[in-house]
Amino acid sequence: MRHLYRHALTVSGAALVLGTASARAQDTTAPAATSLPTWSRQIAERERWLLERHALILPLMRAHAAAMWIVVNEEFHDDPLTQLIAPPRPYAGNRDFFVFIDAGAAGLAKYSITGYPEENLGRFFEPMPDGRNPGKALSELIAKYHPATIALALDGTRGVTRGLSHATYEALKEWLGTESSSRFVSAADLIEDYLDTRIPEELATYTTMVRITDEITKRVLSNAVVKPGTTTVGDMRRWLFDELGRRGLGTWFQPDVRIQRVGGVQETGKHAATPNAPGPAREGEIVRAGDVVHLDFGISAMGLNTDWQKMAYVLKPGERDVPSGLKQAMANTNALQDAVMRTCSRPARPNTEVYDCAMAEMKRRGIEAMIYSHPIGNQGHGLGAGVAYGAAADRPAKPLRLGSYISIELNTATPVAEWNGQKVYVMMEDDAHLTETGWQFFVPRQERWYLIR
Image (tube, rainbow, N blue to C red):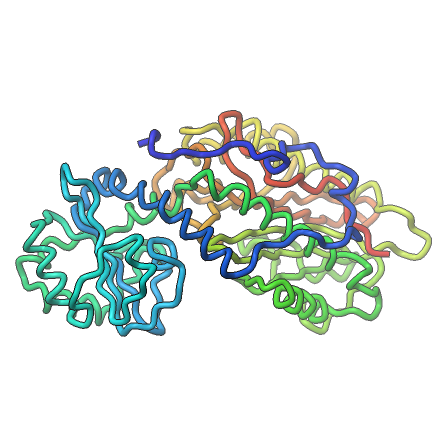
């Protein structure tokens, strides 16, 4: 199936190789200059992408033995697939159906069954004339094409793969009858492959989104927002929400701010599996001199999502730079990134082998490490091959796929002499895409601490 996945691996000024961080990349005071187009232009661009994405569907359906694929959108209970398989516009019908059929030599047949037909649908689907009687329309399609299997969002391990409501499932069984409903199969694997397949046209836009995420992150982890001794974690989060609103962006999770402090640690790690990690710092916690501040943040736009973690240090009076022990802590996390991204990852290599390879390198170097990287793209926690602990135990190994997007999420724990030997966790997360030579970041990684004075 690899021939299906066409990926652009370079964009002028966009695909930046690991380890090329510039001085400006570490400048937290740089003014925000990057933006996305207006909403109407975003819709137009996404509809151009949709033409490309529809070309992927028939080969994927055949690979997963799906003769018919039905996506159902319910009013006030939107299927997350709808905006990715149909024009990204509002749908307010009681139930709207989007049907893909393997029509043999005739190729892919596409039909829409909607209560409120919208003219843009006609560019992508053949509208059925009786949209307010979906049972009749679906029965007509089944009688015309005789699909051996009918794929639905059933029985998957993730929300997007099991999104069909019980009421709609029962309605489909009633409308189509026992003989047709006996052909129902899960579309979970088909959905995963569709969402894990990136097209070249998305790369430049996604790079812009990562740059915007980076700009906002650097701003909030600077004196432009943080006044040590006064600013609270809640103040930082509220600024992020307001900045998202100002830029017309969304987010798929609440920004996560955490603090590590000598002798009074607010957290000791990012992930739930890390010992003694109670969660984000409290809203009222004041950022103080000498603190290590960590941010986990991402944006949503254009049907895509980013995920980003960065670290800042609050200088104490008289300090001009971070203690050397903290510099080593960040260097250890950069070494872990190198192991995952350059040493161990190649297209087609199983994700479990990549994890084992990177952890073996950390053991050899005596670095305490955790890796919990996940696919990203149409969802923040996307579908596909992640590189994370527990992958082999929880699910079968999956090969890395050329061009896939991932959030390289991980941390190292380093005893810091200046903190009386207390461990400091440097947690990083950077979005990347897979090339023939390994993962490449969309923008340079952090190699120096952001400083709050």
